[in-house]
Amino acid sequence: MAQDILITPQATTPTIAYTGNGGGAATVTQKVLSDSRIQFDDGSVLFEINPITNLVSATTMYATSSVAAFFVGDGSLLENVTAEWDGTHTGNATITGSLDVTNGLDVTGNTVLDAVTGTGLTVQGNAAVTGTLNVTGATTLGAATIGGTLAATGTSNLTTLNTGTFDVSGNATIDGTLTMNGNISAAGRTLTIATVNATTVTGTTITGTTVNAPTLNGGALDVSANAQIDGNLNVSGNTLLKGTLAVTGATTLAGATATSLTVTGTSNLTTLNTGTFDVSGNATIDGTLTMNGNISAATKTLTIGTVTATTVNAPTVNTGTFDVSGNATIDGTLTMNGNISAAARTLTIGTVNATTVTGTTITGTTVNAPTLNGGALDVSGNAVVDGTLRVVGNVSGAFFYGDGSNLTNIAATAIDHGALAGRADDDHTQYIINAPANGTRNVVTAGTGAGLTIKGPSVPLSDQILFLVEANGGSDLFSVDAEGDAILAGSFKANSKSFLIDHPDPAKVGWKLQYTCLEGPENGVYTRGRSQSCCIDLPDHWPHLVHEDSLSVHITPFGNSQMTLKVSEIRDNKVFVEAGNLDDPIDFFYIVYATRKDIPLLVIEHEPVEDGK
Image (cartoon, rainbow, N blue to C red; front, side):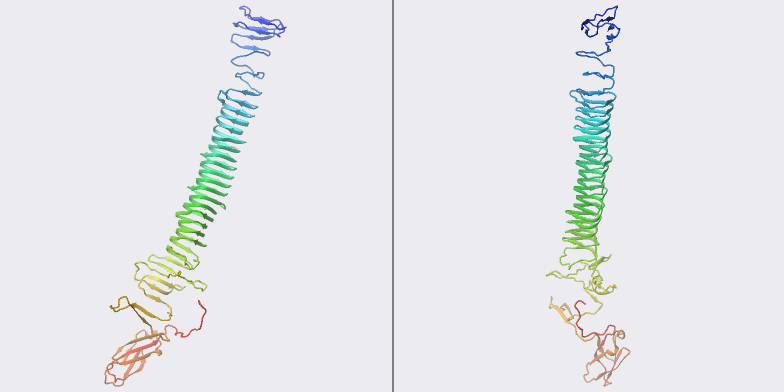
């Protein structure tokens, strides 16, 4: 039978004995001044109260409310108790306030922390959660290993985190290493991590020393060391790398600044500023590619809006503007919507298709450009320039195709070509037309309504050759010097031959005087004069120049019309004249003709021949 017990401590008897079955309730109505104990008939103690306010119960104790500084024990049978305890809780725990752990946190199941009025979860020691840790407030962990998911609504400050999935709706700062088996998600937030090892990283801003992830999706990527992405890299913001970014998958960067960018897959970049750009896949850069180092894209295609680089090595480049402060080697095709500029540098390109090409030295297989400006142009294939070709240095090629009727405004120091080739010498420049090896003609045709003009220097040297035709062996066939003198090595054939000079009569200023040549069926020479002896001395060189048996002599007496003269003998390069009246003095004019023997005899009649031969 249940009964109420009134406990009245006694000064001499500290223990109060209760005789019954223990089924009733006991109410303490006075302050306990000394140890008080309630026990059964068999001597077992129900509970006791001692002066240091400890309450000890051997069995289950029920109370409307219990308030104590702490509980001693493992607390395994405690329910609905708000207190600190030492021990292990193996059941579920729901904490509506804040949980502050000074040493370590070890949770086998799931933990939900709702920081309504508190600060969330703070663990100064180690945190080990085999289930899921959900924190709606701020999270501060010394070192955490979470087998499930860490979901933090607030801000996380972690030293080291090993977890399957890291979902942060606030900001996260990890001073040590973040190692993930699952995904990192921080939409619209900033992750500041020393080292990241994760399967997938998704966030607005990702900053850290080292990032290692198969796939990285972020608004901004800021890595002070190296970044290794085994999968795809998609960054909608800016990418800043002080180390090397290595991506094996596809790369999409809004803007990247990196010391070295190595991409195995395909790159789609808005703007790239980097020291070295090594792409084994394809690269598309909509904005500007600014390089302090090299661009390398072996067997791939670079599609770039603007390229500013020291060195470019790529089989194929498609770009709007190509600006190279160093050298550029493109084994394939360079296709441009804009301009190529390589001041004081060398472009070695297989095929160039560009609006404007500007550079000191441009070498390539094929060049197609509306306008080409360069210091030197060396093309082993074809060059098609629809607009203007201006070359300060040398132009070298196998041949020029076409009659040249559409070529205008060509400025070059020297032209070196098969059909129109030349060289720049120290003293003067020569332009030479060489005959082709197959025997056909080279034709230089002036445009309709125009003429062909060969101009010499404004102040020529006295002996400077302005126009020269050479034989294949190098001997001069025809030349014109600065004085207007023409030298022809072979025969000169024309319908008529004459001279045209300014009229020598001072009364006929502006007139011209023209004489024509006497024609004859031989290559003849003559000498003429006046003699007052019986011997005409012929020129000293005539024995080597003319056939002796070809001489003919015409004599006209002077003064005495009755004088008879005749040629008596021709020998020893002399013509001997005999007078009929030996008493009269001899005085006569003479003309001696002869046929040259240093050249073949003149062929007077020619059979028809094929045109062009």
